[in-house]
Image (cartoon, rainbow, N blue to C red):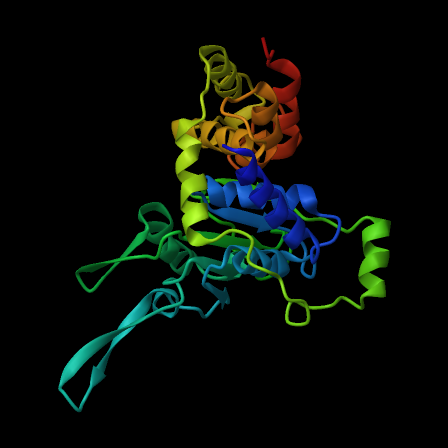
Length: 308
């Protein structure tokens, strides 16, 4: 990618980071996920800026944006849409649901029932929705940002493995650093409505950047490194479930996108390591001989898999 491309991406990251203070690494990962044509899961406590991040990304990229608050009584039709009878011409007309947008925020997705959660499966995987025997294409790009609260909170339903695997990345925002929090207090938590975020990347530029990802070169030695990571996750008692082929492809695609964002036409091991936690932690499950979580398993892979 040419230098102006990197400049566009850096400008977009800085613009979003101006309202999500102290979270530039997470903003960069979220943008990487979008450019890699994936979907993003954000797991954190309420009030950490999950909604702010999703809305700001849509603004700086000039994409249409809708938000759905997931609750226990939410139905699939509330997301996908439904046909309504019109008496004046004795016909049914389809009224599209909020899924027909470019950036969809599925807020607190694990507060809805598994039936409603699964309504997003086809949309996320196929970029289309089939209702009443008719298939309807979704806008391009189509990017789902789902948020969820920690499972120990009451009234939550854990996402099934098949749904988790549809998310290219999972990130956490966490508490702000003291300096960022002080700056937020000085601005009195100025909202997006009060702050005008400028569009940094237009639709044609976004399409060009996303298409350029496939042209990023991954050497045989780099592919060997990724395969060693996958192989280590599939052996030993530490892992109950290792990386699937889909997970391995997600790791490569994300690493290529990360390299592109750094203005390189080839992937380095550093790129793989930069995206490894976000891409793999939610796909890895600890076995009986391991007491840590997914991030601890990622740290094990970092430590035990040689780069060369």
